[in-house]
Length: 120
Image (cartoon, rainbow, N blue to C red; front, side, top):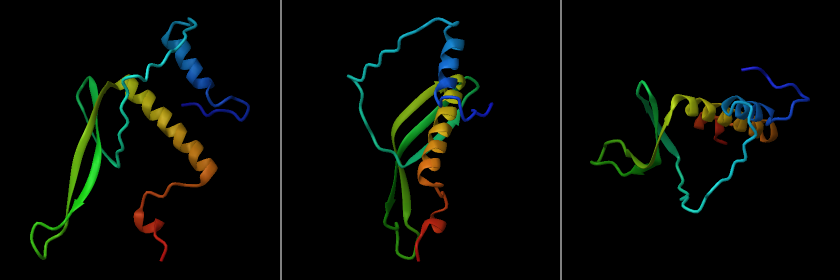
């Protein structure tokens, strides 16, 4: 993927993708959120077939140990499953990458290692 120059508006590549997908036609996008539900996820699982990407979203719930002297258990409670083709999945991956890059430019790096985030 080509890097955006400093003079290129951040959404110009999105407009370029829209032109490619619609054969250069001008298209107006309307969004209907009337049937939308909002959920929270702190965990996800991915899988795929030759044609589709499967994304499961849900919550990691820490439970007490099943027996004394054993480790606690984590239950991954799946709330939502999204199935999409690889083209849409790639557009999602690019968009998420850009969103995270902009966030880190404004607020600093997101450290994924919990131990490195801890303040002692």
